Image (cartoon, rainbow, N blue to C red; front, side):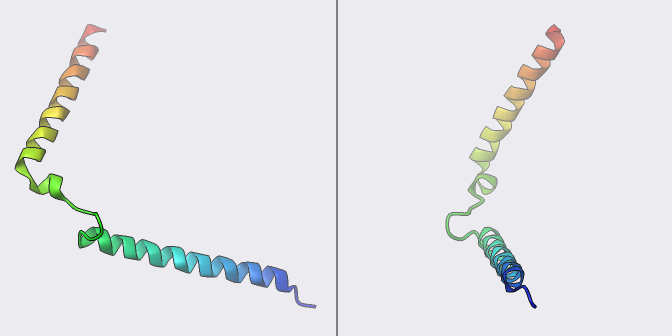
Length: 70
């Protein structure tokens, strides 16, 4: 006798895996083409890039001071 419950569970897993893969492909497309809220403004804006650079430098300076005091 064939166990239909395990076959059904396997097909549910296959369908869910396919749906998950399809949604990941869609999300990648949206990110690549900057649609639906995905944008790279912070990498294109020189002021934002400089602001981020200054924040990173400040954190690194603080870490060096903490390391030198120990």
